[in-house]
Length: 303
Image (tube, rainbow, N blue to C red; front, side):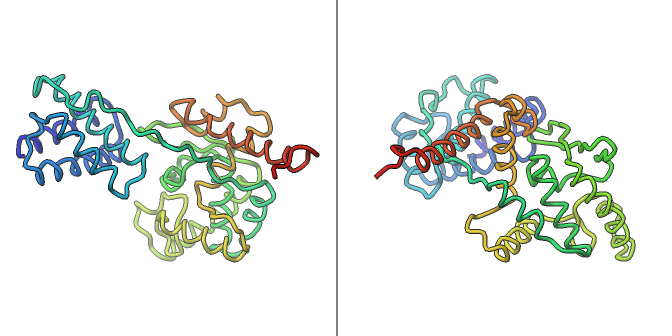
């Protein structure tokens, strides 16, 4: 087992230093490879001498678990990459997973808000630091389409309010510019002096002073803190949908596609590496069109 652990460590170092994958991706692969390690240990197997029967047994164990199809596929992807590395560098001459296919996933359309529902959310916060801060969160997420992790990593120096732009770092540590509406810029101009004043009063350390989004103590906001803010506003507004920061990202993409932005433009704005990831939003538009047709057309309603 020590040999497997050593090879795993080398592989994880390889995918970050040579392939340029992010630390977060490497951590996910490490978690998945530990699942494989547990299986090898429980079955008293050597990873270099696995038989097709051993592989089928591992696959059956994954499918019996509570893991989603996408998670199972990620586990398989990590293991396949591990064996590809081992073969390439002469650790083994065979990959027992080379003929294993990923599980077909059921494609689910992302939940989106209507433009009216988005406006309700944008208008919900009140005055005062917390209200203005919450407005900034909602407006920036919706006007840029950025991920929550990208927003929370933004420092003040990354913003160019004169141009209505923010530099964000996406998956794979790739930087891109996202764009702010005039309304978002106005809110940020109101918020930034309030943020600085709060941090001065709380004598916040330098590491947190640079953060754009902060909590009521002046420290960089956590993802859990933002999710809690969303939950509270959705409860107060009585929204029936489950709304998260990612819902605003989905809504942003769907709404600008509805207004004839090209799919390639949306791909760039969202920071998607592959166009296939972005195409899900065109399906959302088609689904909405179908529902309107069925509701409005005399012969369109299903019985």
